[in-house]
Image (cartoon, rainbow, N blue to C red; front, side, top):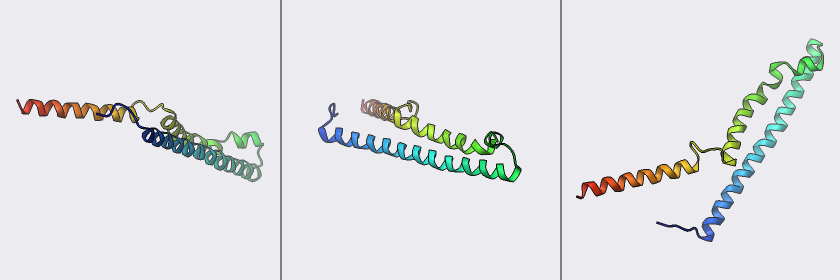
Length: 113
């Protein structure tokens, strides 16, 4: 079993990490731009249609509901990228692979006795 990583392996892991970070930051920028536009649009349209104060229009649930629900998805993306993914993250996958390999090896040994 390989116990050390070559320079190429390190480079590929670093490149993948940068790709994940870039993807998250693009997602964050899109989240901020689109939701800002949607909120501004909703507040202005409700203000003029119903003639209510801007604060009341802004505090309407429809003005910030997309922020909340999309924000939940963005939070999961952040957890995945920044390492808060212990339950089903990369380490979990590696631990499960090692566990299954060990079980197979033990099963093979017991069958050959």
